[in-house]
Image (cartoon, rainbow, N blue to C red; front, top):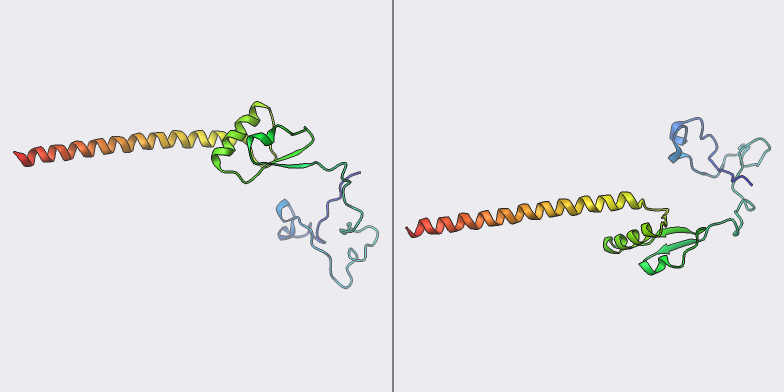
Length: 150
């Protein structure tokens, strides 16, 4: 059975209501006095009502991953979401998942790992620069002290 997409009454007429703008294409209940959609007349778009729900057998089971051990008991049919986790744990989980070829529906593993690598490199470079600055400042201070003694 094809899944019905419920949209507000005149969504195709104005761009602010969703014409050529998917984000704006949302459901709003029809409320007008003479609204044919509200009256559920034949030939008009469907209105949200009981009976359109997808059967439980067709729905995917949602699993939240919060640590590496949660990756062990996952089947292929499950919808996998990465839970509220810090960067350190997220990194561990994503590396393990990429080894086992597990895909998450709410995060792009490759993109996330690349960003973290870039940040690490940037941090290393900045720490090297700051170390060099500190050394040069110390040398300048030593030279000043020697000049003051003379």
